[in-house]
Image (cartoon, rainbow, N blue to C red; front, side, top):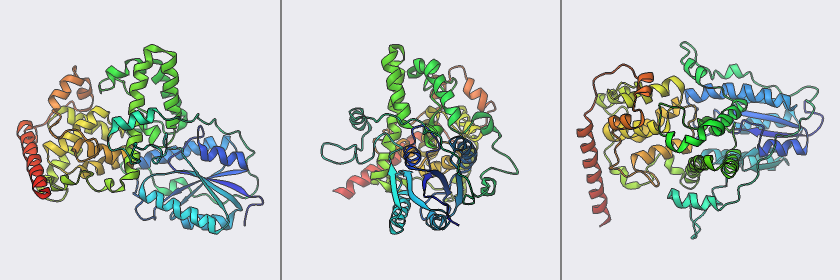
Length: 464
């Protein structure tokens, strides 16, 4: 049975918020709005969420449903192939239009294009908006009309752009009367861990949803941002924004954060340096997504093709390699700074950015393991894992990506600990017990540099 009057269907994805949500705002402006979330388990190329992300999504959807209810908007949960879901909903409701905020990975773009075509064939309008990024990937280009491969020129170009004003939360509507299309039971999706419940540390560390984000943003502006340039590399203190999960799940719009940082920088000179430094980090997130849009192969392939000849080992290649990877996963490498980072990741679903670079360097350079092994582990264990940042950052530390770190820059865990955890607070919290080192730092660094030089020589000979 169809609904009596046409409805505006807002398809939520990585935009679980009511503030500055263009699709939701426009949907509620044009008529009675319903929200839809689809757990896509069937579309080709859509990557299954990792365990930590599934935990986050469960709680984020509960929070979003409550917020939408206050706005008078029902949230309908469905799982499966989006095309099949929409065909069924078309039979259950009179849909005037479908609205969504755009996605930018190749498989997601393909899904959205099919839905847009399907709606058009049914006479239903489909509208999409920019709600996940500051600017569309096709809007930031070089003078020659190409996409950027180096961050600093990209960032300078972004600073020249006019970033739109954030949209307010929509005005509430009356909750729809009568029968609504059935919504699947969130618990039936089995997003939460059972036997054992390994998510207790996540529960202690995080509150998914939009409401908690603004409390953190207020704390950031009031007390963290002034010291942010000096303390953001210190994992032993609360010196970062800790907003990466909020940006990944769309609880916080990048537009809101960008403009708020600009406002605070203008109003308070003491906070200006911190605001600009954090803006640069937000721009790096933007850069990663623009890279992925223009280079979809980067999810699986080295952006710098010469690294195809680097002799990284893969999981399953040998018992020795698997033993090294397992030690890295568990945080049992014998280097306290690396082990603290890996245990922080397992316990909280998050890792300090400085330590992410360190553990990444240790895996790909000291252990000689392919960056895709680390990317896969981070995908499964990070609450803030997204396709673009995860793959781009792993390629950055491996040297194979765009504007990557020089390969000879091999992070020394002992030096990093002395510099960024001088009192051992971070190491003592997450890795108080030591074990024997699984690799010699000097020898493994030398092996990595020799392998890199061999790769370069091979590349030169192939070009000559």
